[in-house]
Image 1 (cartoon, rainbow, N blue to C red):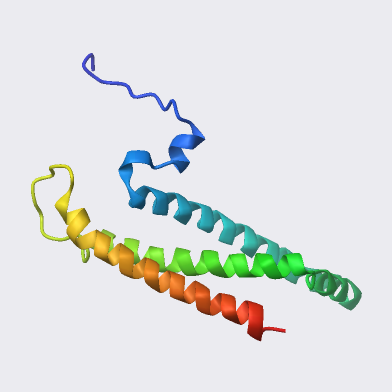
Image 2: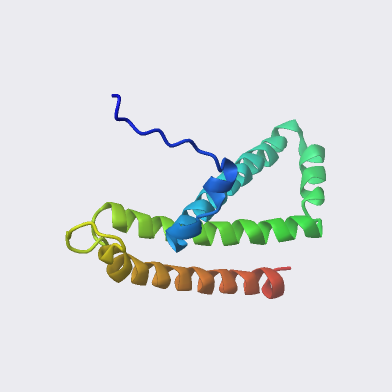
Length: 146
């Protein structure tokens, strides 16, 4: 245990958010975490809002009227954007974890070719699909919904 090297986390939360030299995968990791927490908060708020039905129709109607504010419309579109990204990035991560998008085994020499040759194209495809889904949802939220 005498040769054990200790690496302190001197960056704190900045180290968690700023990927720096690690590339786009690190940023996607941070965005995936943030969208996951955002979706959790939305679901908790939705459960609270739905539970107001137990307090009678007046309380329910008052709560529904307060949710018609334009700020909630923006929040609703942000929830959709977070869901679209989180879901599609989650599919990408599942494919990687199952070994379906990792590539063949090779000597681990930086830059890791399996990451660049196999995982990056999958990342690009998933992010394009995510952007298209967000644009379609944004169009629906902005122009089609009443």
